[in-house]
Image (cartoon, rainbow, N blue to C red; front, side, top):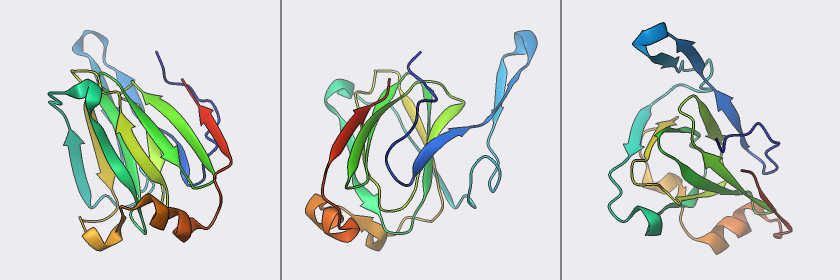
Length: 154
């Protein structure tokens, strides 16, 4: 489908693959391990689902000062836009064993959810509002680089 191992151009982001065990007629088992294929201790897990107005929803719209995350689309698909202040890149998540690592100081939005989308996120910290950068101009000031290039991966 839309997943691709194309190069991710933005800073502080990369593809993450988790183990996929095909168990014959009994389905597929995928395994995520902290400090393994998830590159940090997992302190929080959350998921987004049941998006009633799924085509018009935009989630995220922020960056983090110290929190790291890995997100997987367990069902359906969505688009994730990553922005490091210098480059912006759009990624389609649509396979439950292929995800994206979001490091610090990376502005991100999630959009274009289909109606059955379930987006799972592992986070390196508990929720802390002080860790969020919710104003885009403040984000650009924090990373201190001008916007130059835009890329799309499908």
